[in-house]
Length: 121
Image 1 (cartoon, rainbow, N blue to C red):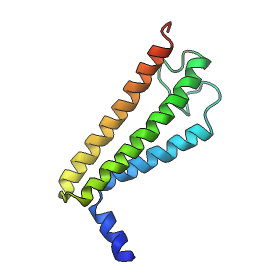
Image 2: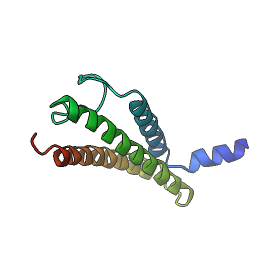
Image 3: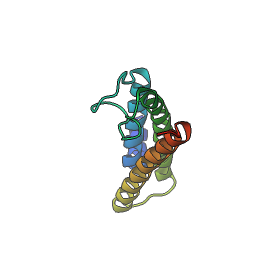
Image 4: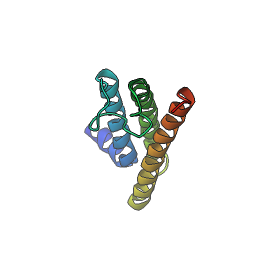
């Protein structure tokens, strides 16, 4: 059992795996305990999302759902390390690149949804 666990850990793209798990856990917390009022500490905080309470509530739920999708994507991609065996430098570059792309995707899709659902902002 220990040998299998070590094999899996050594052959995953470990950075996307961990970041994906963190995204999913954070999003589940955000869905379970969403911020009730607009604040500068907790939640999806951009200029558009903080315009009014209705936009705020929508953006919290929407960004949490997109965060779960992004986290699961990162976890799924990390299992490519079982098929391909890149060296550590390639793993680092791929991990950082995917993490940045997922964050850009999260912000882009959430802001696009805010503009679509609230055209008067």
